[in-house]
Image (cartoon, rainbow, N blue to C red; front, side):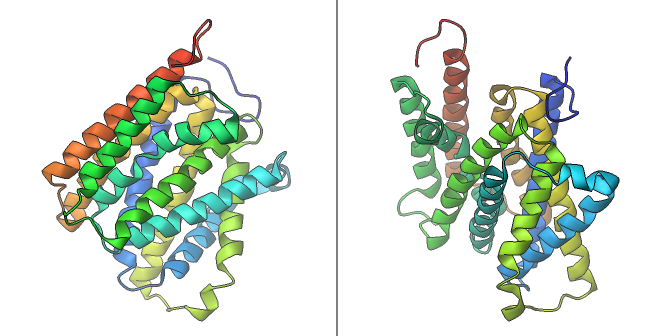
Length: 299
């Protein structure tokens, strides 16, 4: 067991998996709370309050280390990641206004496949024919979920996919930042960019929350902070290839939360599509892992 250069997280695959699964649970709980809040409050207000509380909850964690933790070696990358988080939030919240939580989670789960596709132009990686086939099969799973002629042919169905693109860029940025900045530095800049970018709009849309609204929005901020910390720690604790597959644990969490809170269960088509997406995603990630082994060839 060793320590990363930029942070204090012990290097362990087991801990990396734990942090990733925990972060997915927290993000699903955040989405579930947000789905409840959007019945009453504007999207921009929810995002703004989320990041304000996010920052407030960070202060005790950063305390006297703020001058050090606020310094980043890659400000451009931190801003890019923050913008991608905002875009992901907007896309997912729009989808949650219409679609059940589990369906949104399934459609969002193509992000590992999008990471593979984007790794070519953004990271200069080579993707072989087998992985491209895996990516294509994964998007066939999306077609099963959306099923032409089915209930999900709706304008909202495109937003989880758009959110997956921005989330994929977010993941690539997080991987790069894992060896550059402390996890709290990354989380701090995510919240800072979030507050700055939404503050321009919020005054024109503001709806004053009641006591329950404030409590739920504070909960969203706390879940957001903890989720981002856990995600950042996952990539510091273990190689990306080991922890990325556990993004799919969000499907389990989303199904459970969707049923308990909203009484929704995914239908057979959604389960079938999710199975195809997860299987193809795991295949692509496995080929990627083998490609990076010594003497490997592009797969």
